[in-house]
Image (cartoon, rainbow, N blue to C red; front, side):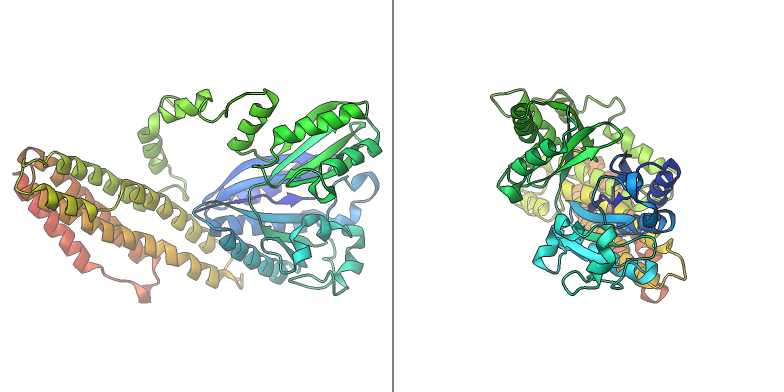
Length: 494
């Protein structure tokens, strides 16, 4: 399970504060800070980070807490204000599903974070995107319309009362917007002009709400420190309006206004599909670019990284970092190797090369997990551990800590318990193939049984370690079956 978070903070000039925001994220186990982007004209910093859901939520909370402490919105006036519309120090915190997570699960993350921000930081919070509780609140432009300067009056009205928290601004940090959304591309196009009216006309022409391009939000802004104007866009439907199409249309409109695009700016990260779309449009390629990128082909052929996947995996397991993959991940990978050895023994036992006929081998194979299932389990073990570690690191006086730890324990116990069950399936099948399969492949089957035993043992240790003492299960029957299977396979091999 992998979630992305892309919080926007109203600070783009003070490097010390920006470093504190980034450090708050990187301090959480199981979270990778993928990108940070700061702009002095916008007076804004955007962080992009990803990881297991619980860990990402914790990192988001810690970063917002730093923003509330370090950013005083009362000082943001005149040139200090920045040109980007905003409501508070931590202006918006979206959760984005990346892998194994639904938008609805991201909605639950947003709602839980909103409650925590209100409870622990005294922030008024709006919910937006797929987490919005009213249709008009799904869109950020509507929520931001009062801006910080009009926030107090807005919060006091029924129309714009917060979804969670006090109906008044935080004394220094304003308000925060939290939500869930799909992938979005923030793409800014600077014009070789200082005429704000030109930028506004172009923005109006391309944005969807004015009858322009599908999935395009756009606004014309002045960049006072650079002496030019900008069409700032959010692209919310990349399948219909990617950066290439938007660039081409803004360029056409700029030329009609007697100017041109001087530079472009990417805020955050760009999905690979958007890179391909831009290349296809701007290079006027007649065929899709997918499959024709050199590095993609090298990745597929496993030639790009001289270390190779096995070396990278072992290096990760050897890492002393507390949030690095551990024994559970190693156990699942060991079981995947054992399954591979077993499948080889099964394949070479067909055609009467052992006591098992092909129908029996078919039935045996159908009972086994897939390699993909075991590799996913290895990843889920790491993510479950990172989530539990993040919850345990919350301050003991935090009123939400107990609930967070309880929620994080569930996958941290369930994943190793699944590993035990799958290990029994592989181990007992391996013992049978060792006894009744191709005698020349008995060592491969014995290897599979021993690796299954190792995986079951580490699964048992992790399941017990991650469960509360009162709820620990012994799993003795499963381990006895694995011990018997491994012993039978070894005896067949001697």
